[in-house]
Image 1 (cartoon, rainbow, N blue to C red):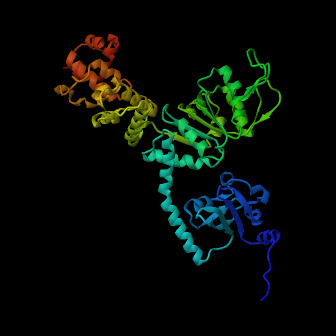
Image 2 (cartoon, rainbow, N blue to C red; image 1 turned 180 degrees about the vertical axis):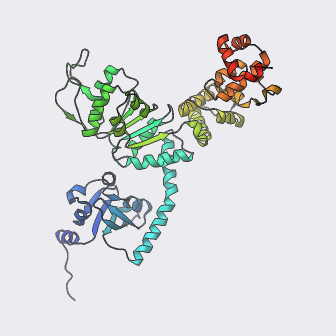
Image 3 (tube, rainbow, N blue to C red; image 1 turned 45 degrees about the vertical axis):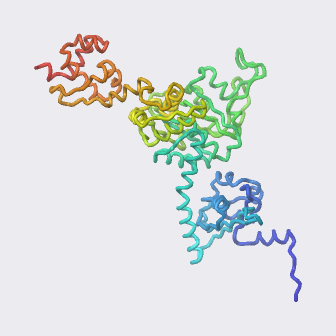
Length: 481
């Protein structure tokens, strides 16, 4: 029997480097521990440019996709899929987990070939695609659960889609613009993107551009040198851009940023360089920019209050969070979430009645999730009964429910109007910003009842000329009778 030749480490590496197929190995922590010479052909990357990096770092470079090794490790299953590399090569990748004696995954080996797949591989690819499709819903549920931990509930379809979009955006390093009303959850989405990104080990630095005087914003962002201005710290101070190095800088209320500072921020976004206030030497920093606003930036651009070039630099990806009134499916889960949160916080065990929940569902929540959180905290603390009922709701919410319950018929001439539940004054105050149709109905009802612009003016606490203008606008046909 011939003696079997043993292979040295150098011989083994030399053989692997002559393999036509790419061999790519990551360890249990997702760190690349080996890749052979074929990676140069597939991605234009040398061995030392890939080994030692985490999977997320490589994913962020968009060298190829989608990545299979994280899924092969998580689900302990061999997966095969067609992929496209950054050099335009269509590749067939098989990711195989390597188990230790305890059944845990020590490594994941990816074999990558630039060839047309055989019939056996086609079948395996089909099985993998079915498996990935089955994972889609569970992946979304996992993401929703992750945000729920961060005081953010996403039960509605639109919010689940926003979470899914944020999860995908997190893997790249592009700027993000988050829009939506105050209290909708923009800062939580920003933190979620940072937490899911390759920069999650770096700092998350937040600045509210509306909270600082114009004279201080520039020095807060870019820092200043010694003696830059009167009252400055003698040693100077580094800015938030430098503090956010290798992390994320979150610019909340970006619409309030002065135009003079917008130009300097644009320069930093374009080439990563900036000058400290009073400084003469150019500085560099590496941080991702996420901005948020409740303002209409395109309108601000059109009137010259916001730079168009900065707007487009910020909105490489745009995420719009709709107001709570447009995602009613989130209200009940949010009520339950905040009820538990504040019960735990104050060591109470309050319940909430269904009638009370029904009233909360009818409310328009102009302050969005933040307002709902505040209301629930108030209810838990102020309710002296075991169950929170309608009588404990804030007056604005109870009045809204009464307005909703008004049965104001268009046939006002027949006096089919019920305003007993709410005074005329309260009704007008509430609908002042609402539909003209509701205002018309109330004015017509008042005119039928009071028959006098003076009495209407006194009831609504407005001038008689304003009352007459309302009557003339809405009650022309009644004035003839």
